[in-house]
Image (tube, rainbow, N blue to C red):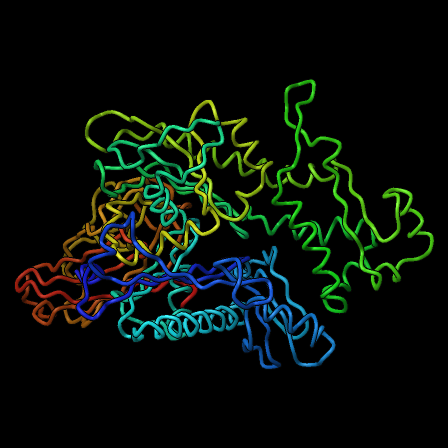
Length: 606
């Protein structure tokens, strides 16, 4: 099928990736040439950013955007934040500022979560969020193409890879591909790939044998590329936590199959920042003042946010209580210096109360117990997801063929894996069952792995179906259907609303393996076929009307010419590919072998 074209392209000379995250966004690239064929020594080029937006210390920029009066993105990253804070500061009519808007992609459900919009910026609808996403992706693309052009490479010589969370549904992935194309990225499947974020991190982990940090104190090398080795990836990002698991099929070569199950949730570290702003600051300053800060005092609010951020990702001192459970040491209290402009908004009575607690003016202090309560609200459900994944891994038979599982490891990646408390809790609960590792470049593990994937998508061998997928079809009537479902179509008894199963939940699927079914249009003069596409958690649904069945979109294919005749008695084959990051479909003429690409459209794209 057309997917094979993602493996090779004569024009492609550069493999590039964009990791668009809730908190940070970055790009990286590698030249496709003989000296980069070995992935362990492959040169990957990154820009460098500082908090000032220029050259400096990090490989990812801030995902914030500055918007114009019509909602278009005018600037992104640290520069956007500085212009909003220092020059515009929310006081100039017409400008807007947004952060965390990636989490508002489900704005139609009302779950805005950590998405924040100030001034004229809008995150309340899918169309508004699409504008922001397209805007930042366009600016990232331009910056990356400029960087590659400096080395002599043209835009049409680049194969791109864009990262997406593992817990996203198909409509979310289609939304991101559509946004990328609108932002100027290639529309061709062979030059615009999507990769699951923890999947990309797994590739980085399998390559980083000498740089993995073992929290248990062990120093022996972990042979991740040994056949049968299993690796769970826990990607702790800003907006979501994603968990996937993989097994290595071959020695000394990255050939990965997905095991376990995809799980996670909206449990990223930005929710701690959200609680800090909406609960902790409101508790001390008052809800009325806290609600004004983002629009009226953005620079001052950012200075307080930065203090919380350092605390959040630091090595918080913990001790064990009488029950043996970890708790914050009393010295792990949080102190936040309050800018004078905000302090002056408080009543004299409130200032005295705060000073009595902290011991000095212009400071907010939170006890270790208060801080731990906030952290545990996020970390407790994260650990539950890890337990869910580990249980699924243990229930999945060995895939490598030798019947053995020589090593099982957990890889912590993402910005929130910098949190010492999170790592302590993970080791406390799971250290006896699985070896816990973290790459030295844990913040950029996804971005680096995405470049490797763009360079060679064959690293992934198979994935597992998250749902049972099928289409609504008219099928031959059977007695089990009951007489009420029997309809005469062209003189034959048929049953409508049948669930034609394509793949079953949890089923391993090869990357290029297509689920096939012989197909003959019920109405022989049909020029094309549109099938309603369904998913369910049930293993063997019979009708699409069953309670758990959910219509998620439609499949459309053109009917081969010779199959449009009433006299034709032959089927053609419909193939649906579930092994890739995105679902693809095509029609195959059984008589001539001609392949006609089809389309899968999900609800959000209607």
